[in-house]
Length: 66
Image 1 (spheres, helix red, strand yellow):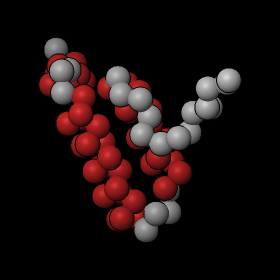
Image 2 (tube, helix red, strand yellow; image 1 turned 120 degrees about the vertical axis):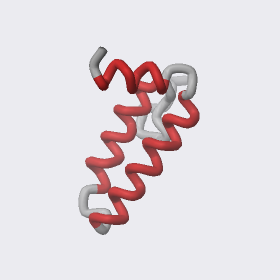
Image 3 (cartoon, helix red, strand yellow; image 1 turned 180 degrees about the horizontal axis):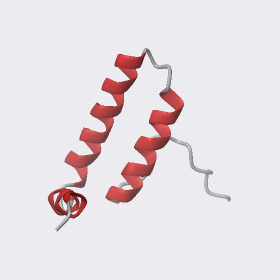
Image 4 (cartoon, one colour; image 1 turned 90 degrees about the vertical axis):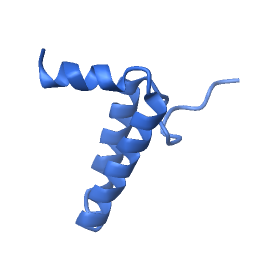
Protein backbone atom coordinates (compact mmCIF):
# COMPACT_ATOMS: atom_id res chain seq x y z
CA UNK A 1 0.00 0.00 0.00
CA UNK A 2 1.45 3.34 -1.00
CA UNK A 3 1.71 6.33 1.30
CA UNK A 4 -0.97 8.14 -0.70
CA UNK A 5 -3.39 5.25 -0.19
CA UNK A 6 -2.69 5.31 3.55
CA UNK A 7 -3.32 9.05 3.66
CA UNK A 8 -6.60 8.70 1.76
CA UNK A 9 -7.69 6.00 4.19
CA UNK A 10 -6.96 8.22 7.18
CA UNK A 11 -8.88 11.15 5.68
CA UNK A 12 -11.91 9.08 4.70
CA UNK A 13 -14.75 9.80 7.09
CA UNK A 14 -13.11 12.94 8.49
CA UNK A 15 -13.67 15.63 5.84
CA UNK A 16 -14.11 18.49 8.31
CA UNK A 17 -10.81 17.78 10.03
CA UNK A 18 -9.05 17.30 6.70
CA UNK A 19 -10.45 20.60 5.40
CA UNK A 20 -9.25 22.38 8.53
CA UNK A 21 -5.79 20.89 8.05
CA UNK A 22 -5.67 22.04 4.42
CA UNK A 23 -6.69 25.57 5.44
CA UNK A 24 -4.19 25.67 8.30
CA UNK A 25 -1.33 24.42 6.11
CA UNK A 26 -2.18 26.94 3.38
CA UNK A 27 -2.35 29.79 5.87
CA UNK A 28 1.00 28.76 7.36
CA UNK A 29 2.57 28.67 3.88
CA UNK A 30 1.13 32.12 3.12
CA UNK A 31 2.55 33.48 6.37
CA UNK A 32 6.02 32.03 5.67
CA UNK A 33 6.12 33.45 2.13
CA UNK A 34 4.55 36.81 2.93
CA UNK A 35 1.49 35.96 0.77
CA UNK A 36 3.71 35.98 -2.31
CA UNK A 37 2.00 32.85 -3.67
CA UNK A 38 -1.46 33.43 -2.18
CA UNK A 39 -3.42 32.83 -5.40
CA UNK A 40 -1.58 29.56 -6.08
CA UNK A 41 -2.11 28.42 -2.47
CA UNK A 42 -5.82 29.25 -2.69
CA UNK A 43 -6.11 27.24 -5.90
CA UNK A 44 -4.32 24.29 -4.31
CA UNK A 45 -6.57 24.48 -1.24
CA UNK A 46 -9.69 24.47 -3.43
CA UNK A 47 -8.46 21.46 -5.41
CA UNK A 48 -7.58 19.55 -2.24
CA UNK A 49 -10.98 20.34 -0.72
CA UNK A 50 -12.64 19.02 -3.88
CA UNK A 51 -10.62 15.80 -3.58
CA UNK A 52 -11.67 15.47 0.05
CA UNK A 53 -15.27 15.88 -0.99
CA UNK A 54 -15.96 19.26 0.50
CA UNK A 55 -17.24 22.17 -1.58
CA UNK A 56 -14.71 24.99 -2.14
CA UNK A 57 -14.45 27.33 0.83
CA UNK A 58 -14.39 30.45 -1.33
CA UNK A 59 -17.01 31.91 -3.66
CA UNK A 60 -14.94 31.09 -6.77
CA UNK A 61 -17.72 29.09 -8.42
CA UNK A 62 -20.24 30.62 -10.76
CA UNK A 63 -23.46 31.56 -8.97
CA UNK A 64 -26.56 29.54 -9.89
CA UNK A 65 -28.57 30.94 -12.79
CA UNK A 66 -32.14 32.03 -11.98
